[in-house]
Image 1 (cartoon, helix red, strand yellow):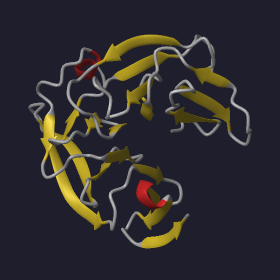
Image 2 (cartoon, rainbow, N blue to C red):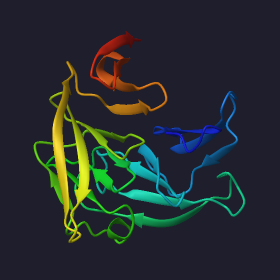
Image 3 (spheres, rainbow, N blue to C red):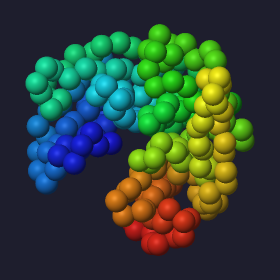
Length: 220
């Protein structure tokens, strides 16, 4: 995942012999400028919240999946010593997750939910969150406008729009976007070029679509 145009972040799940880490790279550089190792086990996905904290999702195969939330050092881009602010354990198996302009969405085997991008999740409470119909959210991303792109295990991809009425009651509106021939393990959105990238774990490839849902090319 990427915090800005200057830095890129990579999660490394490690093994029995190599520790799990999160590494930060300056764009165009091969060697990491920072590495997080404290309190990380099998990191699966990364995202920055609206206040700049880094959320690390543990692998969904873990016994107790959770989020580790790291706060950057004062005055640093996010270099060491970053500190672990809190651990959030929503409960149950976790799939994809993403922060949007108006909320956070989390996927699970029983469905995808969306809640406020902050207080509701920081205390591990998802009560009052909204469910997304017909969605499990195996991979999730949000574009610049705040819309969520939600992919499911059957390869279906939805666009989910969040809204709030004058009384403050929230709602979710899912619309069908496209049907992929695989279940993507990740989604990345290039807002500037109008492209959406889907990773295919099983074939070690990525499929690039336009925001109109047209397949542009597949690379391996």
